[in-house]
Length: 144
Image (cartoon, rainbow, N blue to C red; front, side, top):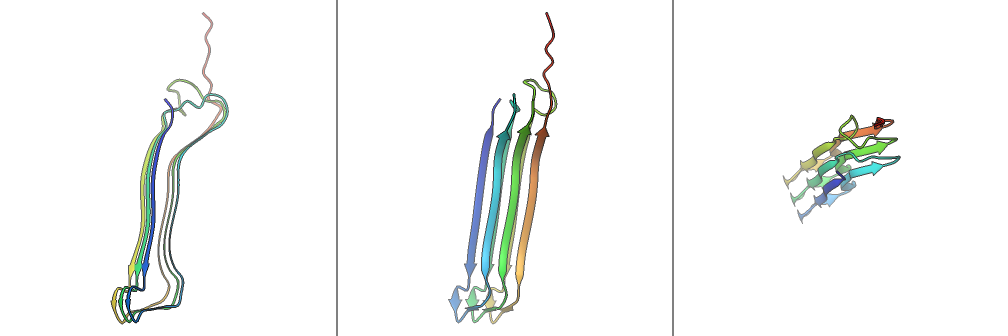
């Protein structure tokens, strides 16, 4: 069985919407994702099913007369999948049966309304799901 890889990644920033809002610091939403497989060597016919969903949302200073003085961020980092290195078997021996699924979210909702003063705020999420197969795993050949 080969690789089935699926990923969903989203970064949203909504900052300073409204009347009289002041944003002096940086505002960011960052989502970084790696879903899939890397196969090196001989074989690597594992059963990789990799699913990932990654999301970073930053909603800050929306309303009236809000002041954001520091950096506001939401960061989500995710690695879902497998890395296969070396000599792997063609059967169900160790190193050949990966099914990985992950969901990762960093959500920052701060200072929404009226007359809020914000310093630095952040929401961070980091996730590693999956396996790394570093060979060697050998398929034993038996003489007839």
